[in-house]
Image (cartoon, rainbow, N blue to C red; front, side, top):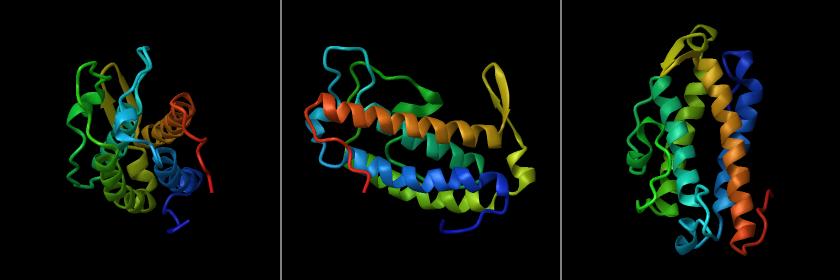
Length: 164
């Protein structure tokens, strides 16, 4: 762990955060841009959408923690938009750049978050949750999305994801 968090509630989440920061890059390793938007005749979310939605999740958390950061890939994901069938999504290279830009800023913000900050309420359509609950959900979702990309690797004929 790079920095000990102010709130012990975040220790395990930050450990996962650091792993997932690396795992997303590993999951995308070697995937050709031509394959990033393939859906294999299904309605499943493709790799580009999954990646962008995870980048947007970190962007949203960063903003919730007071971090101002400009990212080039988030327009198609605002307000947690689902996949748009005929959209052309940014390249995996662009998503990786935004991931590498937002991740250290968010990690610093997570490490510096106080218990009081984590208890702040976030208003969502039809619900209210604490910032800590949103951080927890986002960590869970990131792991799930990385797993989906790892599955897509195999479905598209790539080698399995390398975790080392």
